[in-house]
Image (cartoon, rainbow over all chains, first blue to last red; front, side, top):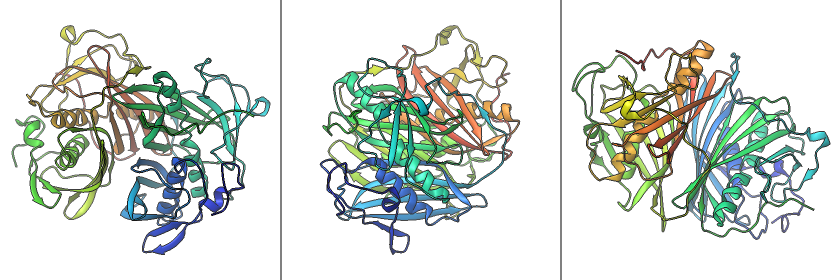
Length: 272
Length: 272
């Protein structure tokens, strides 16, 4: 156990160091005490890293789809077991099961592709926002190794930021997989859900989370996170999101569904 | 083999009849000759049916995430093997592997939930379009047991319909699972990709496909299918879509990613 609470010194690179403990099985020993259930972004980032460790290094993740089945305990090891579904000429398909206490707590499918040069068509545009260099800091306590900047909001009277700049502050080197894992980690910040939350006066826990990587990721560069709550119904909420680089290129897209009515506590505040 | 070509008499109910051939293994024997690879909607609908056959009848699917790993052969049986990841108090999580010739050709994760009464908040609105009762017919040759109606397009000079009414014309009875399977079948119509297609002068094959069911599905009622191409880059395209009932309620959402550059032929035309 490396520390206590949200402000203990932590490293995303350490979090992504998994121990090879069996055939296609990788263990997280990045343990810490925390009053909350394991942050979903950690599950996704570690599972993507585990899957990527079984894939040739010329392939990068282009999409992932995750289900959260049980709350994770941040103070207990997690085993990630990878199924190698297919290695084709240009794509590799993987599925990952995460277990704590020998129970399945999380599953994820992901696909990796060889990079192709190809004409780009981007229909969606980045909204006009203030530059990260001149924006106010945004504190993101659950997201370690990251910094944030505030921008104008789509729902201005809302308590929760739906649009903000974020970047990874830790040097991730040149391994593209680590950069994709960092963006996946960031992508679960869930403020989109928190927004629906406020509308329905309930709090939410993640059910499923998808990320599509449209471009190679440079996690140390600023990304505009732009989240759009879409619907809450039948006890479930759903939002989508876009991740743009500072030139307006759509680097990634996300979609997340959440369960309402289960108290998980405040995990995203701006401050100080 | 029940017939040849797109116009052979076919039944969605027959397609969803799977044979129980082993523990949590279900086989499709709905075989036909067709010049194209198996329609992705069939994979998704049959896999969802297989998963649902292992779930208590008080639970309905609320989301699914599928990967297409190899082109399917419509004239060969498909085995769907279901993993029962979790049966919780109100949710059931499943994963499905589809095999042809003992190779994995398709995988899907899905989650099922007990229906909850809950206040609804719908941020997204249905666009104003002509009523299905007064709209022109739209021919959807690959989608059997369905009819379509044309409406005004978001991209008016486009060859492919991105917005249209559709409904299942076959009586599906009262089993909610069958209705969800029918909507999943419809959801893979892929015109959103065909649109990016035209923009990039390439044709596309599905890579991954997600569906979220926000409300109980009545597949025999009209649904407005509203697809939005978002981006094509690095050889892959991505679009999102909304499925509204005729009162503007968001029943489902979809997101699909496709590979460009592989010829799959025209599979969606309006006519006659």
